[in-house]
Image (cartoon, rainbow, N blue to C red; front, side):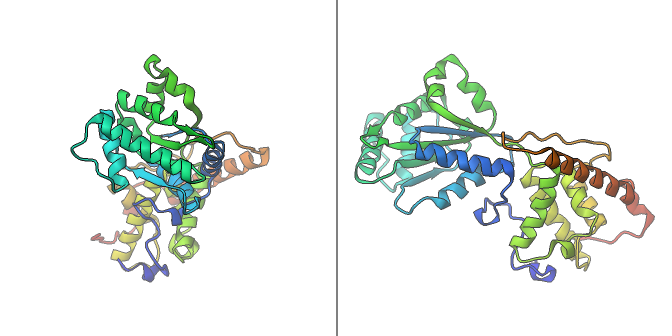
Length: 325
């Protein structure tokens, strides 16, 4: 698809994690600051959890981009490890060091030696990000605790960031992980965007791609998308992208209500009812009564827009366009 036909330089709603498209919502900004503070305090392990698609990985990737070049960083995207040896092999592989044909103890010593040497010669600890960390076995989580015990005169030698689904937090509450839980000074929960933030998220992505959201999306469509995707950035990306593809296939120069409704239907997402209220929970941050009132006004505006658009199947009132995307 040629995004230039909508006046954009590139695809605005990317499926892959893209730090360039980072949207500074209140919850994401609070998480970024908390990770930076934990790193500065030389804490050994940080947990970031939340439902699928809310931007947990993006937050950490954005933070990694801000690190100085001399900070060693290891990113393991899907560590399905049941044994400590599998974790150590993944780390050594990422470091381009030998990892095959070694015993578990040899692997452990190789990782330990590298981490201590890096911390002894450098200023900062080695950063280890483990995405989808809920797949780690109990013995591997215990191994991470032991790695977090490695220290030099400057402090901890490794900074582990666990990015996981919510069920990992429950596992860490079990007695078997009591000592690891004590090492987790920072635990961050990432929640969906508010209705107002969802609408601004869509506009932000279009602007980041060089486009004008007021020209690319018909006036009624952004509230429709924001209400139906329940504040999940991944769903907002998928639905908005599909709506634009459908609009392009019919020769339109913007995504109208019909294109958005069809995109929602294809993805199995229901349009929010006019009286449906979203109650996203954000990380604690200063909030004014005026901000809350503003959010309520946005919800009311979205509900009013839905009333003006009509029922979901209101497209029967006018000839539908054939879409091939």
